[in-house]
Length: 287
Image (cartoon, rainbow, N blue to C red; front, side):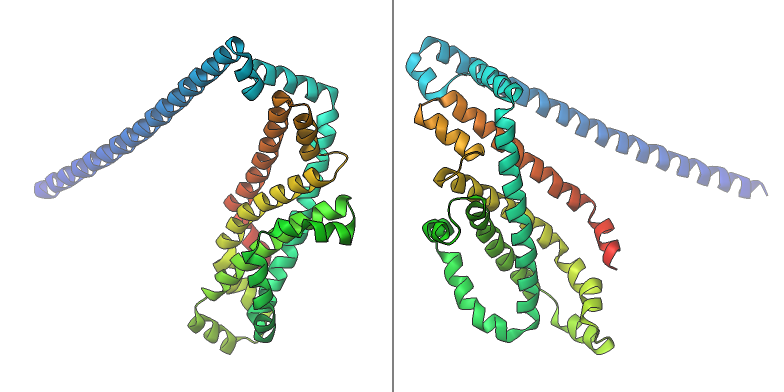
């Protein structure tokens, strides 16, 4: 009986020591990670502060430097003025609408075409040469043709953004389909003839990561397409705002427009990141 008690005490102490050591190890790792994050933030803050101070110093002491690069204080003041006046907000809304529209249409049509090419091999044989040609040329050299087709309005700009998104999605998702395990597909086809069910159960979960990653690349192409379209012909939009500022060599206004484009791109990146961290919820809608 005494030996049993001693054994339990010894065993219990060992377990306790192991648990304490494990907890201390976890706390140490979290502390190291926290300190690394703090050091990173402090370092980034100091570097950016030094950069802005040096930029401001040279801008105040050199007219040529200020003409070429503006200054942080001028950009900040112009940013507030344009925002409070509401003019650039209208341009921002117009560009955001055109980017969203071109991205949604290009993504949906590109994804559907990728599925068709995967299931119907004849279409793949016919369309592959055309898709290859469109992928190897800078798509924006087609802008003059698009202007003839759609004029110089919103449809022209949306179509330019659509082309970039569409081709990128088709190219990326088609490669994802080629990675599917043929043995798994054969087994699933032998079990069920319902292609929609097989797509939801196996294909969509397999390609979902590539699908979300393709959104990141395609949204950038949409932004580039819309901005170039606004450079070519537009009455409003961030591209037009930057172009008008360049006519007067106003670097401050140009950089304000660039900051708004960065804000727009960052917003889309956050939305895509939200989809990425909630992909299990998305899959639950289909499975």
